[in-house]
Image (cartoon, rainbow, N blue to C red):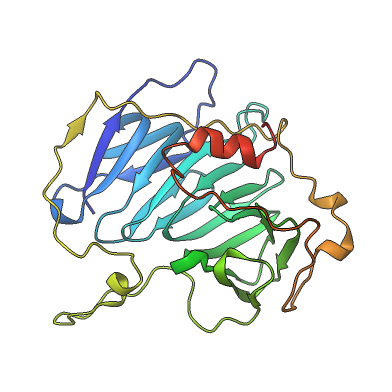
Amino acid sequence: MAVVYVATAQTPSGAQASPIAIVTIDSSNPDLAATVTGALEVTGGKAIIAASGSITSGGETTRVLLPHRGELRVCASTTVKLAADSSVPAGDTPGLLMAMDHGAIEASFATGRNSDILLTPDFRILIGGPGAAEVKVRLGQKGDTCVDNAGVNAPYVLVSSVFEGGAYRVQAGQRVMFQHGSLHEVVDQEKEPCGCPPPAPKGNEFPLAQSEGLAPLAKAAPSPAVHTDTPVEPLVYTSADHAPQTAELPASNIVANAGATVATKPPAEKKKTGFFGKVGRFFRRIFGAE
């Protein structure tokens, strides 16, 4: 796995000492290069993300080490933005905020008392501990969202709709497909896998990764090794200001192992354009700051 990195800023004063993510740099195959941007330190063949950053996979899955926790796999042609909860006390493991608007990820990490959150254009997916997460999420065409909560110590996974209201709890060992980005169109025993597609066999003209939109159709030109003049808007995640109120959610709003979910308000018009171009406003809207 090759990595192109973009260092844009130094670690802010007072940030946690431990980095949130580490990506190994391998420049042996530029055609499969991944891109890492944000407040980085590059040392010993590794790109170290201090508090926030972005990872874009090339033609293969990128393995991201989460120190003291586990691993995040960013599937081919997928971009994931990461930010740590800045409100936790020193020495405590912060929750992780992840955001993606296409592609797929596989999360294999320990969960704790500080919940992790994955944001998509349609859903807010809360991963709560303690436990050992083996969560896979894939975004398909027309908003189809597949969520797989596997593992014997599966965490608490709650999927909340950004636009419709309501929520759906994905039980341990359950794989769910939310069709068209809606809690009203649920396949609660999805048969297709949710994570990264398997590598295509050589000679296959229509590999699965390309058909799912998780691999480039044409070979991209190699990117330069280092860019330092590209501004990157950092993410800020503070759970104290935006703590999810899942414990107070009415029982009628959560449907577990069922094919329908009760919404608390009528659907609103979806606005998916510019998901990463206006990521700051997107997060403010989700957390109720606007």
